[in-house]
Image (cartoon, rainbow, N blue to C red; front, side, top):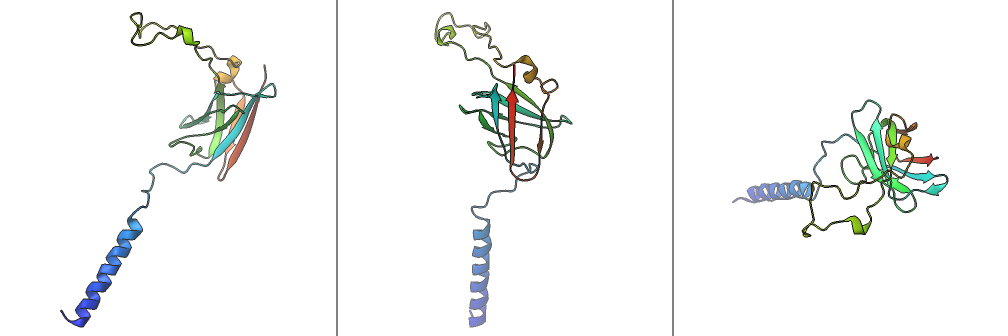
Length: 156
């Protein structure tokens, strides 16, 4: 091989490695539309609401986002992947908090009395019923480009 052929081969090898290295470790482009971070707080009569489900529904009904409040009433929304936020737009919001079943009402699956077709506990929504439906809650939010923060103050 001539000296020029060696240099061309070396150049091609370097270019190939550079192209491969640029592609290695990169994440594939998502097919999802762009979402923006949405974080917020839910309180009831001034007190934080823990373990509440926060559901955003675009006013055109096309897509939603949801989150769960922590012990301080804070939440962040998810649309496609955990914590990715929401699509930009106008939203109606519903918030629910269902009571947890008492331990003694749980029949273990390996117990002879276990029957998956019999409800041993029907959870009750602990928040006023109007907040469970985005059409009646009167709660709204607008998601724009960039970080978004919302606060929902619920009352009896």
